[in-house]
Image (tube, rainbow, N blue to C red):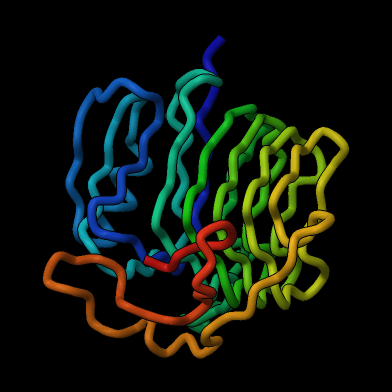
Length: 234
């Protein structure tokens, strides 16, 4: 039975050079993008096995980026070394603005797909930093950071997500909402896991120029020096 590999990313998304968005394991095609329009089109049109090679940059789509290409429940999308911030804010003065403000929205349309997010961060989003968005699959969220989002750092109340080594600080409603089927280990809300201090909570350096290789700007924002928990921010 075909399913959609539904994935939505927030409207302010900073991507590391060479980020691969991978629906499935076999590579059917590689698409290189370096503009917001190209990124929107590539994600919308991706098929199972497509690799989207994203040039280093900060992209500001005017709507949620979403892939709903037919695939299978074993064809997840992997997102690594990205930042998603400031979503759900009407920058355009649009009276019809309706963004829900989540940073990483990993489902939709009742689909069940085990998407993966590694080493990424969400901050200052009006909604939650990371959310299943009704995807009940075994989503994997590993070594990420959710900071100062309006609702939850992590919202996985109905699915069977695997949450490991994540760091949630200063989110409006709570660090996490997780259902009984969620596996949670090594996160700072888990018993016996301490919360390391941030070296900086000043996000201004995240807008600095990138290196010549296009990697994310060098920053101490939301870094902790930990080798076991939270995003490395690079």
